[in-house]
Amino acid sequence: MGDLAVTAVASPPRLRVPGFVAASAVALAAALAGALVGPAGLTSRGVLAELVDALPLVSVDSGLTPTQQAILWQIRLPRVVLGALVGATLASAGAAYQGAFRNPLADPYLLGVSSGAGLGATLGIVSGGSLGPFDIPLLAFGGGLLGVAATYVLGSSVGGEGGAVAIVLAGVAVAAFFNALQSFVQQRYDDSLLAVYSWMMGRLSTDGWSDVLLVLPYVLVSCGVILLHRRALDVLAVGDVEAASLGIDPARVRLVLVLAATLGTAAVVSVSGLIGFVGVVVPHAVRLLFGASHRTLVPMALLLGAAFVVLSDIAARSALAPAEVPIGVVTAVVGAPFFLVVLRRNRAAA
Image (cartoon, rainbow, N blue to C red):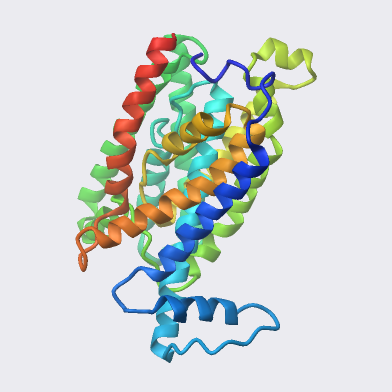
């Protein structure tokens, strides 16, 4: 199965400590850049001093006006944190799907998870104010779970269990089906069309910390479960029979991982919309740099996934400023060529 089932168990992780230091530095630099870049004219010294002043037992005069402080704490930082949560979740979910299905092309967007979650979230949006704040993520989770289940069943029935191309094609078909249903719902509720369309293109704009607090519990559970199962993902890479001989229940582990990845994906999709290709680009970039072991891959994907989405959001805000490009467009521009390269490598290795 391509480059995933190769030597995840046998090969030691490469550059673990220096790699974590470098990835943490990249994520931190991306977060600082996200806080600094914007049209409000906040100085880098003022922003850094304001952040230092927030530390315990430290007092620094940032020189920012109350309006500038509000822009930093209620607009920029929530957006940066939300982007980091979205990127970390989508990247770790991609790594989990690829390991669980032993399929290097698996990704929340390509497996129908995002489209299913999108349909669920759309139903929540068009329902107006009749739902509570936690109902939309639950609807998205149900749609995402239905999407990945349909993709796996269809792909396995055509190409056998784990058939890479068959599962991807099944995911494309399932995603198209859910997108058609979503379009039908939009047509029926055209008064919510603008809100749904804006959400579909991907967005990280937020008024304060409400969206961050809404998705945070789901993200912690999802990423925590995937992190705890990173060694099991290495064992699954060598095959179900071998995994069972090593004391791993492949079916149970796979189910837990799929549920956790779908929960996190559905939660972030419900607030950020459809931001594609993060789950393909980041895990494969980490494999190229640090090897295939999930002990390194999963935590690295969390850090670099966060950095990737935050940097993509900066590009989306800056490319046509003062207008804003949907972040889904930016990730697609980067991710689509990368996906074709991965597909080509997978076919060559088959």
